[in-house]
Length: 249
Length: 298
Ligand SMILES: Nc1ncnc2c1ncn2[C@@H]1O[C@H](COP(=O)(O)OP(=O)(O)OP(=O)(O)O)[C@@H](O)[C@H]1O
Ligand SMILES: [Mg+2]
Image (cartoon, rainbow over all chains, first blue to last red):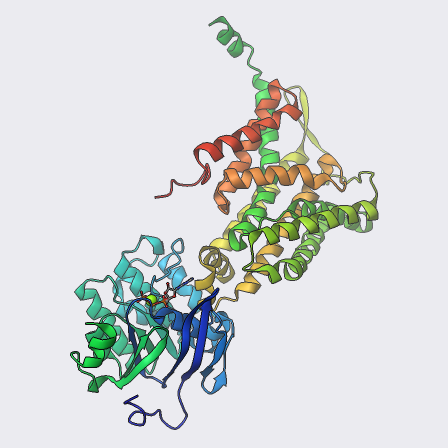
């Protein structure tokens, strides 16, 4: 735990603190005590080989699976086993690895699933839409097209844009660059920076190690359902033995 | 060759027109019932075996309101609202606790509710059929028939209700919530959509539509505790033929099957004409199990 102390969160404590999560799918024990924190506005990477439980960690934080043991704290309050729709209202947004666009809804309707919340004025809605359409012009062009007809990269953009409609405090971003061509990857990279500059925290699960090290402030490395390593991103080199050991790059 | 010729020369054109009209009228009612059934199935994977009893309950509520207020239209509106509320309560009590369980449990639960409602109606209202008087008693001449205007009113009102429901789904926040939940319940929830509430509301809407059909159709058949049975069976056929959970498909299938039955009734007895629906069902299941009126899946 080399980063302990070097990069502690500011006075208010972390935005999200996950403590000793144990999650099961039926009888199979997947998370064996995952603990991590994400500070306000912080981009944190979560790396690990296939099947180590990265996505399961995100799903557990999002309240899509409830842990058998452990706690999830959001801004100091326990939110363990809170239904996902309430967590979304509390400021957690989720971009799953398979994107899960509402295929029969138009691009606009996909966005409206996150926009039609109580307390959002029409002006605010317009601002939010204008913002994502300026970052992702292609979504603006295709606003009346069914989500299922978009290309994979466009669907990824829509999934991120849809999460942004919630004006979240944190986005759980699961392998956003998976299967995308380099130009799309750099666009995703840019949007991560934009969100970071706006103060949105991101918990970023990625296979792309260089991108993760560049985009994040800290990284956790998982193996077999637990965090094995924790480092400040700028201090971790791509050829670090730790990376070889846990990721086999 | 000669027999083909006699078929055409003796083709009962007038009867054909009359039966087309009849088929559309029953088709629209069936579409209204099946829309609710499809909505409920599409959004929560629940096959609502109590749907026919919600139709029956609507008709009885219509009888009660009509006898106290004398207004058919008030009966239609109040019965719809009361049964919608009842549907919401039924969903919360019997189905919400079963979310995520084996679908068999919801079949048993709704089947149980249907038995309770049927026997409650028998106990409360007795075995003798009640009557709902139609709001219009006028007729118009159709060939040799006096065709009741009210039948056309039924078709028009059902179409209006279905159209209104369609607009509600297409536009507005709640329609988007319902469609998003239908497509991906988990992601809808992650987007902050209160999925349990959407489920309850969808069930209430489905129940209300069944009740409205019960009141509308009451004047044609008489209201008794088993009136839901025939309809729900047909509605199930329609939902399967239309492609489970596919709203447009169900509406098309309802009209298609009702028309076929009406035409069949030109040559065979109406009781035998029912067989047509089963034939369509069997052929659909054999050759196009995803539904007759849905685009071929890729
Ligand atoms: N719904 C499920 N039911 C049962 N087991 C599951 C389910 N989802 C995931 N698993 C198992 O849980 C383990 C962790 O899966 P998870 O998706 O969290 O891994 P991951 O780290 O995200 O992998 P990847 O990099 O391939 O996305 C895997 O062994 C997987 O097979
Ligand atoms: Mg994963």
